[in-house]
Amino acid sequence: MEDHRTHYPLIIIGGGPAGLMAAISADSSSTLLIEKGPKSGRKLLITAAGQCNLTHRGTIPELLEHYDKGERFLRPALYGFSNSELINFFEDRGVPTFFDEKDRCLPKSLSARDILNQLLLAAREKGTDFHYNDRVLTIEMIGEGENPDTPETARFRVITKLRNYYCDSLILATGGKSYPKTGSTGDGYTLAQSLGHTIIEARPALTAVESNNFALTPLSGLSFDNIMVEIYRQDKMVHRFKDNLLITHRGLSGPVIINNSRSMKKGDELRVDFSGIGRDEVTEKIKKASAEEGKRALGSFLKNLEIPRKIIPYLLSPGGSRPGDEGSINPEKPLSQLTKQERSLLISHISAYPVTISRLQGWDSAMVTAGGVDTKEINPKTMESRVTEGLYFAGEIIDVDGDSGGYNLQAAFSTGWLAGNNIKRNRES
Ligand SMILES: Cc1cc2nc3c(=O)[nH]c(=O)nc-3n(C[C@H](O)[C@H](O)[C@H](O)COP(=O)(O)OP(=O)(O)OC[C@H]3O[C@@H](n4cnc5c(N)ncnc54)[C@H](O)[C@@H]3O)c2cc1C
Image (tube, rainbow, N blue to C red; front, side, top):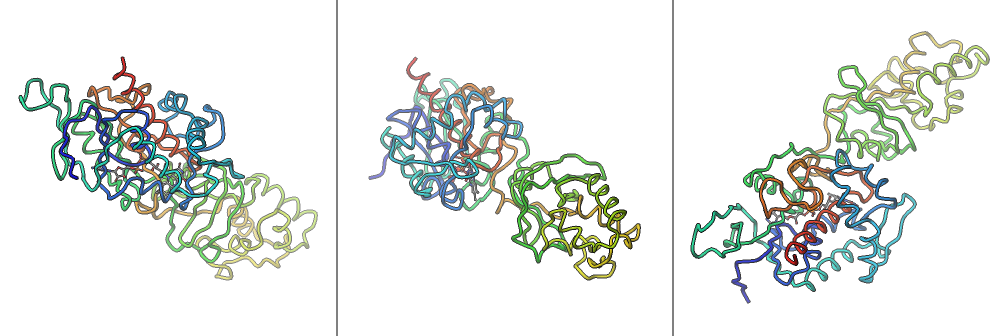
């Protein structure tokens, strides 16, 4: 039967992990959650390929190191509802979890559906009303005595496709802009702006990079452990990162790229150290080997440097070209016979293989959004707006993004929990 109630003490916009956890911690029989899609948690269901990496092992200070700029802002939220509390929440509800070899926490069933079902069940147990297929279009603040028909305590009028609602407190948990198919299309930014908030420009984050005429395409699928990648902008090194690297059809991926893509731009040159030992040591080793074992074939020397065989022919070809193209160095060539030019190409390619970024993959494949509601305008201890009383934020809509490994869901759960819990405390005080 159609529910015609329109005034709620609390309305939450967005049925992702942040909105659901906020509904649970608000712990009230009169919360309304409005979700524009036909169901909640569409993005949650595709996390970690449907297996849901819900958080990460570590102390709170360790976790906090994995958020870009968000370290100070997230501290109260993560202490308020930590990774162990999140794990206990699911364990208590019959969803055991485990840590994999990378210290990522997943449900033992490897099913994101189990996580979502428990969130929905818990929210329903608290008495949350769900309205689906109803998109919030605008929010208006209600002036005092504005309309005699408006509920007295209401601060906001929430206008959806279908009707007008009123609420005393409001949580915006509409997510970011990545994977728009799941419902996060950036609506929340416009809504927040209309309520006086500043939006830090939203950019795709946790994404792979592409390079035009990528020479390493035939090696797609090949991965390397602990590789140093330096980012050069206008010939100046701006960042360097070390982690595992994956070669893809069109460019580079893997944690060293994905987790640091927020620092990369189109046109940047990535220099990849396939040697694992850096330019100076590579130069030194080549010099020494040429002097001491000049007859040794170049290919055999490179294997000794522990560079995977498959990539060696590519490191011997001039930038952007394929093995055997003009200018390639013959791997059979004795070390002592390398020309100065060949030696210099070899050193650069082994220790700083250049890949120019032609494109960062976009919203359709970025896992999270960098940017969003400016954290300066949100009280980190409560998630309440510093601009508009009674307005709260939770989840990816906030200008905080984490590395891959469970950090983004933990942030969504912790900020959602804090916002809901604070509203509960205000209600009870
Ligand atoms: C492929 C993929 C894999 C991922 N894997 C992981 C992982 O393993 N671990 C991890 O930590 N993170 C992962 N993430 C990131 C994580 O899923 C997000 O950070 C998290 O879902 C954010 O939660 P949220 O509740 O803030 O927003 P969302 O999950 O995006 O939910 C926001 C909700 O708001 C609704 N909404 C938006 N606008 C309106 C409106 N106007 N009216 C009503 N409703 C609206 C949307 O329909 C949506 O349901 C992954 C992301 C992707 C895309």
